Length: 223
Image (cartoon, rainbow, N blue to C red):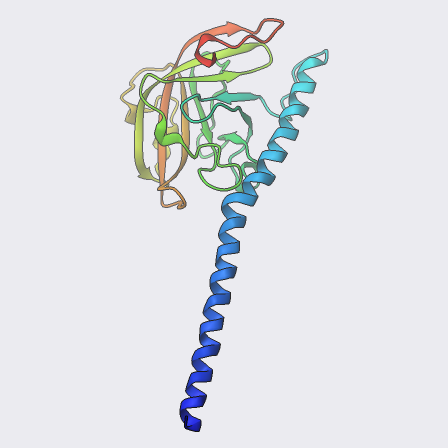
């Protein structure tokens, strides 16, 4: 083999090794982003959830600094999702859902009317809304607080809308078909999966409240 050919072969060999190394690094990054961040987020969310329930068990007025309750959406997951204030990435990265404080302030479930608006990650960092596409009209969405179960029924979905479409968060979300004040819940997350190009929206409306008994027996929708 000539010296020129030997040099070319050496370059090709080095380039091939670099490609393999880059592929391994990329693979490790994907594993970190889509698996390990879920492990860490679920661990932190569990810790924070236990902390909030410990606070519920104590006497005195309700303190919401550790969270306001747990979201239960059987069509998405059999687990519960801790809900706290704020939808910035730092908060959501702990494997929770957050309620909006801006650009349109969320109502809270116990308010006499308004739209309880929530966001959570769809992939990585707990991915609490990963299976939002499995939610169907008529499905239950239940929010648990220290004293009350709030039971909503899904009535409309919007599989894709602009990330800048804040109208879905309005107190009366007219894009859902509603035109009068009520007690609504809105779930928002990124779509398609593994991107943040658009937003996926699910709307529900409160159908009833149940007082929490001493055994914290869940409503029928969660049994």
